[in-house]
Length: 205
Image 1: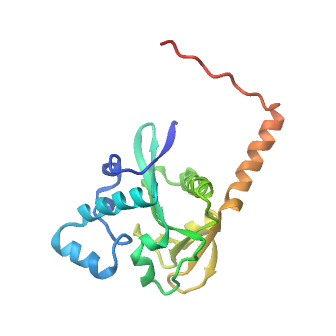
Image 2: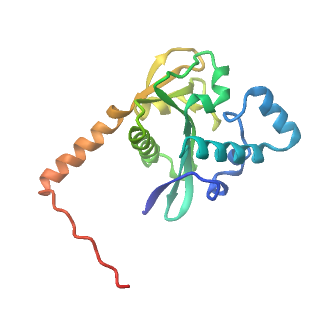
């Protein structure tokens, strides 16, 4: 099973589920979001938001492909770009953190570790960019797929609660600790295998 995670851009935005492409829950404040829904422009607003964040800040998401089929995605950005975050009772997101906005994995591909791989990919990206942590608002009463991720899922991939709340606690993942286990395993494997480096395969011109 070949899987890859690529940066979210306007080119691969159509690979997101339609209901996600037309959702601006996080991207707009509640009033603007309602206005966009009434005007029938949420998809355009989504494109404009992604374009602006890409230009101002850089990569703000990853799309997951398994055997070239899009099966999931994750979106994240500094809280200054996420106006809806201020509407949560456990806001604001910490100044040293990026907000994990939302994520989705197609039901047939859930339970295969893709959620953890997505979080580790985000962690590596943000560490390279000098951030210490990623935070998210969770849904403690989650019943079906929605814009706010279930608390149980966030806890299962390494987040810890930093601001409790009966419905929407805020959780935090220290980026270095999120990668340490995986890196420790890779180092142990390298030692076990003698750290054999494969020579690059030269392709004929």
